[in-house]
Length: 161
Image (cartoon, rainbow, N blue to C red; front, side, top):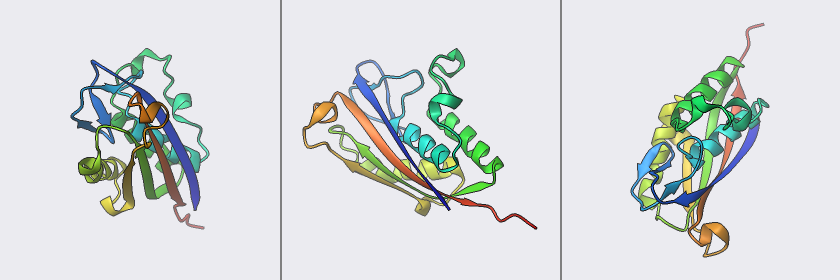
């Protein structure tokens, strides 16, 4: 078994859709970034890559490459899952914490988890999403950003000897 941790944060701005866990969340602001800026999926990608010791999201999908401009992070997660599976790993489980002062994410946690499980080809019970506020502290507490942490457990596929 191998464990990896991922983290991402993006600034909230007007004029962008808010995408978290691959789903659109109704809100007056969205996250700023080169792609759709889905901090949840970016954290999951880094956790999975970290567990497999395969680098990070910036190494595979650099923000200097125009082909990733505006790309759905869900597409990046599909590519990472295929890459990690090709290296002999499968995902045991993913645990996620989303830090957002607003919007309230309670009613979206199960949808995010189900969507991430679908993208990874695993059971919904293998993905957990928790939502926390930052108690009014820092850029998250001041409603200027949303961040996410993720932990991934990978298991090596049995190799025939």
